[in-house]
Length: 389
Image (cartoon, rainbow, N blue to C red):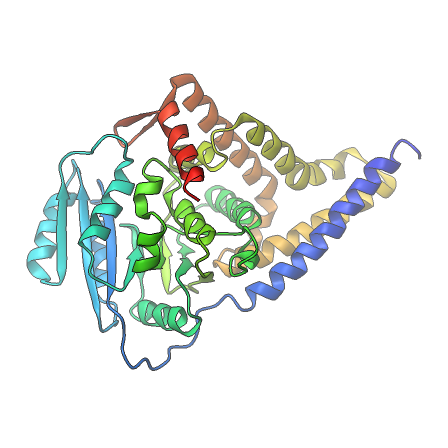
């Protein structure tokens, strides 16, 4: 009995923490919805900036949804970033059909830049809007989205508004992993702290980052995060650290994306972000691995490996994890059914993190979109970013 007491106390402490966290999340998520559209006397100009590299499969549908937004005062800037597929031809045709579409073509990537970040910066330089909307080339938006988002932005006097999309994915395995990722992402970003000025909680979502142009330029633009693969989150962080007001809401199917077409695509796609997200530090990788295993995998394993009070404690943990999962996944339109695959999903996330770290360390850098970035250069950009805040 004495030998299991410390483990049982740890288990009960984790359960108590999860209960408290669940209550926090529930209180905040109830309010994290798009506000009702309100009448605005003067709608500010919004510059919608869309970078595209080899997006022939998705770019036309996505851009037509942007063009169909019923916002009265917008400009659309699309950057063709060295595409080698049919993206350029599609964009040229759309620019002929729609005069409001501004097309920028990039033929060469300057040193010291990640391709997407450079494209976003080029788009921002050409933008004339009071508000800048950074979005991806595979995002589908419903017509009322931007009007409601700007209404929320103005009503709450924000400087940065991130909106989480609904995910249109197929397959039980892929959805299980995406659902697990969303739970981890929620716990990491702490959306309930994003609006609080005194908290470090911050967020950025590549699908929809709406930023006050003056705040964006004052905080360092994409120059400060030129080599950050996790550019969306880092943009949110630098805005938050400069004291700008930030909020995150969830689009409730007003914005959607087919994030990845397969589990293999997801594993490869997250390779560039995973190690960067923990600042290329092995100590953080090890700590994250231990925490993920302890919180999300061990309670399920313990149901098969323990008995008595320990078993009941782990069962309570599994139940509370299920409530937390259902709440988090439900906000972005994921079914609670995928909770059954949570341990598997977390195991895949751990695999992605280690795969990302080992490949980058062994190669001495990261290869992304046919361009190699040295690890020393990536780390130096992170250090310079910290010095500027």
